[in-house]
Length: 167
Image (cartoon, rainbow, N blue to C red; front, side, top):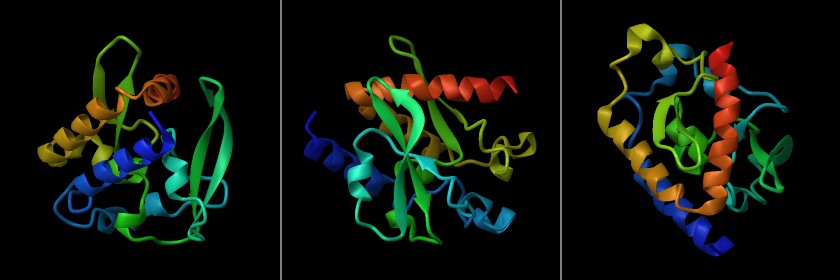
């Protein structure tokens, strides 16, 4: 898939989450917006090709990580303060959910094991996330997993997630 086509695909998926959130209120009110309080070295993974949508935006920095997917370094998006929901990357839009995928296996949408700071991932909140939100996250990744670079990245990401689940 061309770089232009993948960025257009991300934009289409972003629009599906413009007005859709995990709960019908600002979930940041539950935790003081902990997920948006990173530092200069923490951020959200970008999906392959997604970095093109953030280059030149002074609210964010794209940083290469030590993780590789295929022959490419995985990029991290570091925030420089609060942003509008419509400016966020896919990882933020789907938080606290994440796809778990192994090549040739099934796609599963799970609570992100790295998101322990999020009250929505705690057992007592098990039924709080809007089922439509789950469905949209699953739909987005059923589409994205057809892109070879994304499938490769999701396979790599799944190893990272499994390491967190073991801890």
